[in-house]
Length: 396
Image 1 (cartoon, helix red, strand yellow):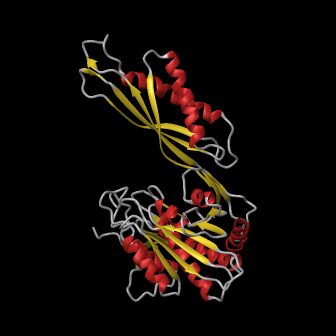
Image 2 (tube, helix red, strand yellow):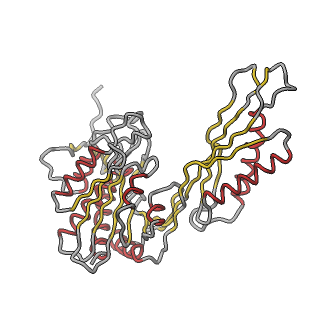
Image 3 (cartoon, helix red, strand yellow):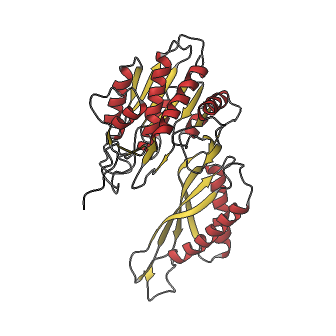
């Protein structure tokens, strides 16, 4: 049998000038930028930051390379305005998740049926390409009064230290995070808080139950209570876009061997939060659950430890950047864009915490973190047009 043929375009032709978002995206997909905090030995962001820096320098952008962690650079590129205008930051991340398990060559950007396939094409090198081309087009079209700031950041897929590092030195009057959103205006997303619950037992030989306290069995009481907490949250007050917060047990570790009562059991849990909730409210909530158990379960002893936590995000729908982008999106799409929220966390929350009004708006496609991934190229062009118009309008 002959192999099936497809309409495949080699978008990595070295004669391409990469002035279109599709051509630039092909170059970006071909660069390995796997986050090494997710995959030990991953390539990191150095090579892709070098490429983006060269591309932007060739178009007159002022470059700042930030690298508090060696080998994990973020890039800030600025087109300075003539003065007196508003500044706009476009934020996109350089890193991707693992290449392992991808169906085909994840670094081969292949175009089929109006879609470009490859790791990061959707999440989020498509947005990265669109914001770079849009900024280049907007600033080349004529002088703007306000600054255009491109933040090409490291580590969004893990702990977002890249955007945190950028915000230590740079700010703007508003920002757009170009994570994929299917060309829908995203004005809110959930946060999260991770906690470890350590349940104490007492080690003893399995034949001496009078001497032992089974930490795993005690942890079972907490797991039942955690499930009940989840049910209460689901019935509680709901955010208009995000619904209610959630909680689940993620990891459990305990015990040494079959013939020993376990002296320790650790449960790691995640609490997804909505606006109005944060790590402090979650800690109080969990402490109440655990204290109630300590009062009624014999020999129940615990320690609660807070881990990584990130705030939820909610934009002001009347913020100028939201109204400006929404207006240009409606003009480009031919209809008002859908307004939505996301259940996952993004760097929007860090920008909002820094006092920068922002929203999330990006390409259409599918396959983030999956075995196949693609971006819809028509949406990539539309995103570029919408961002270009937003920059020209907002920074005038």
